[in-house]
Figure 1 (cartoon, rainbow, N blue to C red):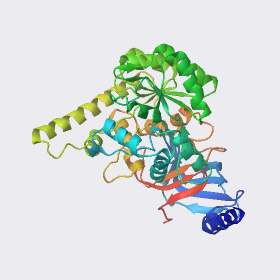
Figure 2: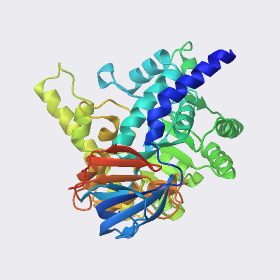
Figure 3: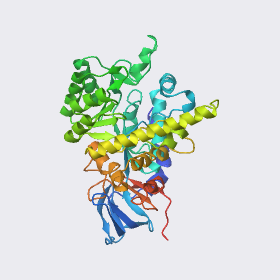
Figure 4: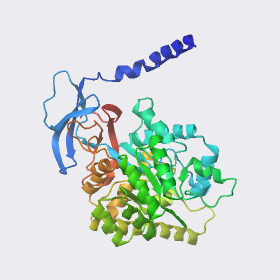
Length: 443
């Protein structure tokens, strides 16, 4: 066994050699130069930007900063640099195929045929695609098997896998059946691979404690899957127990009853809320509960979920109208939320394959929906930086370019303050001081 361990050690040195040679020394300073630098806090773009990075953190960021002697210079030409983006709601360990028939069929196939280890490897691939698109941090909200998100989070943190920083939730808490449809008694054991079913306040309390023991950074609750709804008493004890340990609670909730239960319980964010009454929005604003609107433009839905090949022209038209109506309704809901003073954090809820796009590319289409709802480009960028960082409990580490913050930088050639779709063409990515992608060259 000892000789085998020595062999593995030698092989590790040989394979790690080139990568180590490309990694800067811990105390080395790198200077990222750019034509334009966006301060997301003030909304100002300054010319001749410089970001000084040492190790994993930012030393200083601003205009025309002097570059220390001996610093490595990364010249991005006239590109605009801003903080890495945050996706506050995603599912890296899922990649559903619409042709298999929707969520229920895909979930059953995923749970029945893929081990948690296999799904973690899938998550590594999806995470890499997110990172290369400029998403440097994600909150992975369940549907990851038995703690696959925790394993992936830790592997990325240790540098064993390249991917975004992950805030993990482990299995979501839910009423009986989770988000599965009606299952036979023999199949009901599958639920436990995706959800922790709770019935009563003490089961809810135990479920939170188990999730924290399993390594959860936050707690995810499925408040409603019709007709099943988690009770207000159960939600209150979930929030109480999570907050006692300093962990936020994310609530999947849709409709009057579920969103009201989540808001009254004092969760940190309500996910989706495709339908939500005005009094709940008012309560969310008063309690500073974030809305994470997992919205897309109509063309996303028709691309990701195309009509069957057998559909008639009339059926295709109805399908198109349905997608347009759903997107329009979401736009109105988001506009109402913003008007009510509810804070917004960007979240894609992406877990399907989208033809011709990587996971990251498809996720960023959410910004188009936010724009269609009336959010300004700066409001959208803040939803995906400052607000996302606050919701994740990381506002002192990510979300802005400031001294002491993580060196998570992205660069685009366009102007996202004029056209938010410029963020769909990220050309440079640095995460934690390491360059992940650089398609820019000084001109």
